[in-house]
Length: 400
Image (cartoon, rainbow, N blue to C red; front, side, top):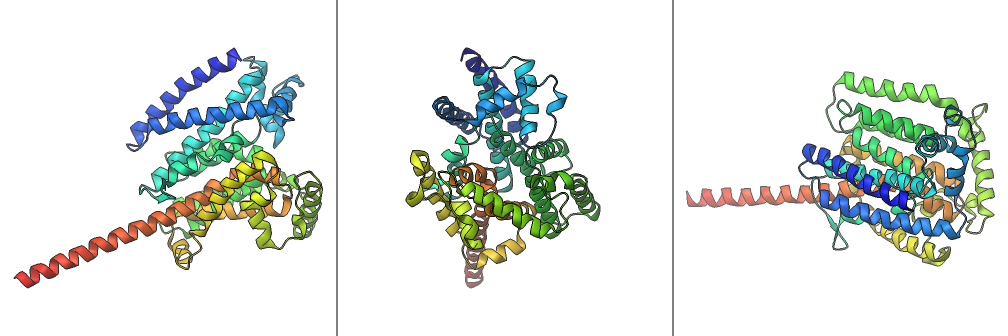
């Protein structure tokens, strides 16, 4: 555990360098908030580490597996293999023990929150309050998000890469390195999620309200579509569809088999027979208090209630109008969130796995909700200013 404590102190110093760099680029960057968030995230590292000590945890296998092979190269691949590929040099060259690897991957998850903060704050300068709390602060400190990104496994690096991509795509010319690194990590850990992100990006650039030069659009389209063509076999291979002659029928068969197998576990739900709206509701907002699996489920239920209340805020007629006129970042986020939800809602039938999997994409929904509320507040402010100016002009005309 001494090694883990030394590593935490080292990462704390690295954080300060990272914060100083972004504080120079963004005047609104809050080092105090990010340091508080780091301490908060470390608390969930301790919670997860304690949980893993007394319960079965995949993190132990993730630590053992990189020690079985003879070379780093044999671990290069997609899905679980790529997590082992990331871990290999830390374990076999730097000599990290289990606790240190848990800290390292927990830090990866924390970096995801830093980029989430940058993504939200750069695109939405207006502050919004919900439930008498600052919206951004609320979503940055949601416990379920931290719990599943504070351990050795897929959750931390995939969340980090998604938030890096979201931040980078706002200025692709100057942040191409961040976009490339995020794309590589996302594709190699979850190829199908890379598909959703690529689709969301292309749709965002096609329909966003920003005026973008033709060559930039062509560059984005070619990069994303070209990437999908190159990696299509790997993406389809995740569901065993790379040799399928009928992709629709093949996916239907895969999703049914996967859902049935997951529904047989302790926290399984029979989602295979649910209509689509109920599948999506289950993926987004369950477990709720009536079906919470254990103490952890009760905590998650409280958080899911917050998700549900936030979702109600966009169930208004003007939301469709807002989406039509929304910028690239909003349309990319909504498309990525919906496509990922749609795919996983067909496959997931286990509340425990749902709690973990949806942490990848919920921030995209939060971004859309936040932007919608901020846009309404901005429109209201502009309307009041115009009304005030009109009143002042009328007074001047009367006086003259």
